[in-house]
Length: 209
Image (cartoon, rainbow, N blue to C red):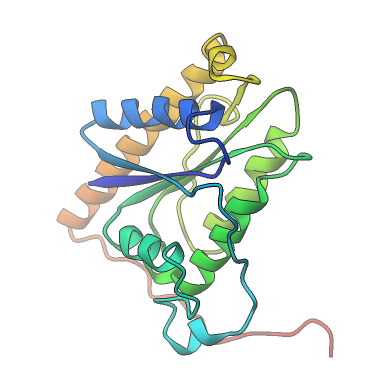
């Protein structure tokens, strides 16, 4: 089993990366393979709502920019996900939102019903709101949301500050353990013959008429 961790910060080795690393270590100790992807600090195209991905069966984005479609291919081979972001104005980074908007429109099939978790790093505040935004991607894609022993947040302006956030690091480790446990439960369920529900997807009601 494998978990993909996305670093949505502009800093490859900043606080968000440090927190994700703590989650990854706990996952590895639980027998789960991990891969961390830094989405970079170059400009990222946002979703243009062109609708082409729907016509393509939600398996690829028409804008092939060496970012989204390779991530969709990675996601297809993964069993769980952790999205990490720094906090900007009580919100996730614009870059991770651009990536996730396109990933979940163009590649929702690669994520459906696989466990997901979001973490945030902040100097002082706004991180609970940022985590809440990222959790929305999971809940609209039928993904079990993995929790921990407290909010999935760490504090610090630099990685050495995060190292002092004992409760935050404990939360990251517990998150990794909980995800490893849930992945094992899902795997055992498959072996026992537990089938996924056959849900409905055709109705699309417009509120304003």
